Structure formats: C-alpha cells, structure tokens
Image (cartoon, rainbow, N blue to C red; front, side):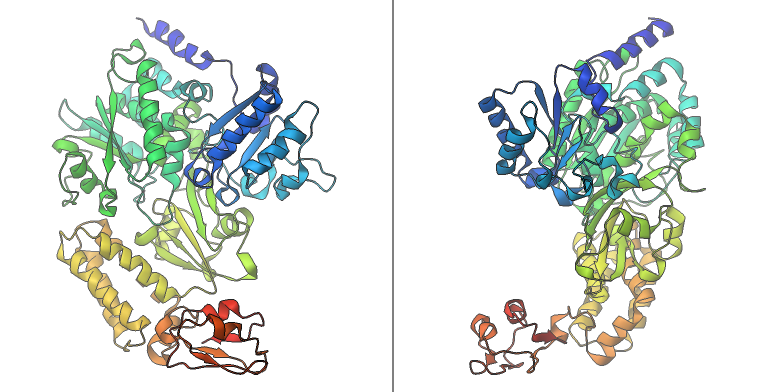
Length: 630
C-alpha cells in the first residue's frame, strides 16, 4: 500500500462513528447531530465510583425505563477533576452540573429536568454554576476550570472511557496515523525536542533526548515502557488518565515504538488500580481489533504490541531500574546507573520509559506542532502539569495548569482556599521525595527549576495542602515513616539512614529531643542524599530538610520547650478545661473513656492530666468550647 493510500486509510478513522464528542463549547451543536436530545455524562473514575456513581447510573436507567425515555444517552466517563463534589453528573446540551448525586436525587432530576419540556433542578445544581436569575453558567467558566488548560486530561470526563470509537472521534490515533504515513523517526524526535517536553514522572528529563538515545543505541530488540506505578501518598494523576483516556497512552507508546525501533511495550501498573487495569485491558483488545495495535498497524508494515504487568505495591518500583527488574520477574530493586535505561533497560535492551502523563502529552504535540506546546509554560518548563490537590483545601481533585502557574493561583483560585477560615501553612509537593513550601513562597511558579531552588521538587504531581493546625515535625515524620517502610534495603544509607532519622524524629515528637538532634538530622540527611543507591534514599530526607529550613522554630519548640505549637503531638499535649467557659453539663465527663474528668453538675469540671490518655473525646463533645489543648 502506498503512502497516499495509507493517508486515506488513516483519515477514515476520524469518521468511524457519528461524532458525539461532548466537548463543552460544542455540546449543543453535537447534540443536534445525534439521535439523542440530551446526553448525560456520569463520572466513572475511582473517586466517584467509591461514592456510588454506578448506583446513579443504575437509577438513571431504571427511571428512564419507568418514564419511557429512550432519547437520552447515558455516558460513563473518566474523572471530571472536581473529586470533592462526586458523584458528578452533567447534562448536555445545557451543561447542567449536578454534584453529590444520589439515587434519590436522580429520580428528582428525571422527573423535573429530563422529561420533555423539563428544566434544570436549580437547588441540586452546583452553586458555582447558577446565576442569581437561575440561569446556568457553563461549568468551564467556574474558577476551578477556567484557570486550567487540559492537555494530558483532554478527554477525561469528555468521552466514554471504554469506547475506542469515542476515543478516535475525540482525536486519539490521529497522531499515530500522521507519524506512520508522513513522518520519519528522526522527524518525530526533532518535534519532541523542539517542544521542550520533559518527563512528568519527577526527574524532568527531556523526552526527545531520551528517545533519541534509545533510537541510536545498537541492537535489533528494544522496548517501550509506561511507568504507571503511582505510589506517592495522595497522588492519582496517572490513574485518572488511564481510567479516562487509556488510548492516549497506547497511541503514544506505539509512536515511540515506531520512532526507536521497538516492537514490544509494557505498561507497569499498580494492581491496586482495578478500574485502570480493566480499562487498559479493554483498550488494548479494542486497539488490536481495529488494527491500531499488533501486526501491520494501519497496513504500514510496522508491528507493535503492548502487555500489562501488575505491580504489587512496592513504592521503590516507581524507580525505573527497579520497575524494569520487576517486569522481568525479579525482585524490584534498583541498580546503579549508568548504564541508563535508554541503552540498557528491560532484559538489558535499550528501553524508552516514561510515565503516564508524559505519554499522554505526546500525541497533542504531534497533532498541534512543537511550537504550540513550547509556547505554553516557562522558558525551561514547557507545556502543562497535572496536580492532585489534596489535604486542607476546598476543591480536592485533579487540575492541569500551564507550567509556571503560581502556587497561590492553584490553592486559592482553583482550589477554593482553605476550609473553616484557617490560614495556609504549607504545601507538600513531590510526595515523600519532595519538600514543604511555606507561606512565604505562595507566589512561586510551579515549574521544575523553581521548586528545586527552594528545596522541593515537582515529583509526579501530588500537592498536599496544610493549614495552621498542622505540625510540620509530625508531617516530616509521616513521610519518613513511609519511605522507611518502603525502602527495599539494598543499600545501607537508605536502609539504615531512614530508620535512624525516624528514630530521632520520634524522640522529638515524644518530648525527648535534645539540642544536638537538629545537627544529627542535617548531617545524616546530607549523607543519605549523597550516598544512597537510588532516588528513594537520595530524596527521602527532603521533607525533613525543607521543614527544618522553613519551620525551624517548631523543631526548637518541640526540643527546648517540650511543646507542639500546632497541638498535634500527643506526648507534648495536655487537655484543660477553662473554668469561666465550663457550664457543668457533664458531657465531657460522661464521654471520657478513662474517667479522668470530675466535677459537679452546673460546676466547672477538671481534667486529671495523670489519667488523661489525650484521646480528644472531651473536646469533641464540649458544646461551649471550654476545653483547650496546649
């Protein structure tokens, strides 16, 4: 088949189905081109599924049957991003945004909105999408979405996640067709280099350089690997891409295979991601059946296939050399580098390894051009970055913003700020490998180099927000407990160093800290960073060093004053009843599990601190805010 014939064949994939692409600015137009008068998108991602979104779909189907509705399409999508509002249901063409849906709410919406002639149920709509006059604001214009630019997440929450037809209609596989019919491998690499795309897994290595190195490496057998072993606490970016648009990853890996001369790919994904694994399996089967994966792809003569490898949850397997050992069937332990994976990876063959978000950014670059992508972000950090917003923040969820967007914008304009009127204290980026950013750096651009300059790092994209009630010593201990537990033990600096550091932090939070402990921590941390075998041990001290830098006064209060300023470390706390506020209602005494509270009815009560186990039940039940901890 000639190149021209291949182009014709490739072009037909954009017209495989009657387009029903539920993109916000085209929803009304598209609704008129289908047999359906309305389309209902329900989130089928892990977050909303755990909040019973599948029950919402079941109730929709049941109610439609009861009311004889057959002209409304129900679509199970991937993550919409605003996880704090799940389960989410959006009705097109009007764009009605229904949060916190329940089967009971579904019945109301069906009866008042979805029957012919009905109108949205305003009291159930997300308040940010309703004008004072009751008219609907397109949800793309609400603060959470209007500051975003979705590239990696472009199809998440837009298409039916288990439909290859919808994936193709939304643009997937067009880049593959273009590459196979119009571009040489070197042209693909040049485009990636010019785009400035850097790996989104944490290290930020230039993607085009990595592909070029693997292409130039000698050998007929090469591999392509997707790192979907997302182990950072609070991170769910990669999972959401795999659940909402798995074909974007398959397409990019196939493009890489063509570019570097590989014919086999592996997706290493956590077994704890059952929805992502299932949708990957469905997507791979569909791509093979459509001639987009396997033998003679698009009749181009190029063969490439992909297999899934399940990880058992070891955090160290997020490190590329440990991950590749696990793929081979060995214990997941890192090895010294060099040699690097681009020249000596899986089965000691040249291997291109990128994480999910990096793969999801490849096709848009091919389709739109490197100049388009390079025009987004900062001078050294191009494109967008996906962050998983969590912790003490109103809008918990998934956001994608141009590189260089400030932390303040993400927390306050997109995240909605800190709940309960509390003050922002810190943000942890990069998970256990990253650092804490204090309020003095709220206006820092979120890009690779700016974060490293202040002792943090981009990491894979976890962003945990903390308020004034957070103890930074306790936070450092939390992350160190995680890395100490996840250390593979292969090298002494990490295996022993994490335990020693944790032991010192335990001393400090138990009120047994000594002045020399701060220097011990700093010396040991620097030793670990310079001598550990892999990035787990090298970066494990980062949370401690960054909190020492920005919150040294909290460490000193724990050590010198034997106090926890945030009131978190139990060993340093005592509960007291303020006599002028106590009304003698006896609720605290009745709920104390150890009988540490005494006092007569209608008289001020007293806590015996020698008996108190510091469980906080008294404070929780006090109606008069008479109990304090200090």
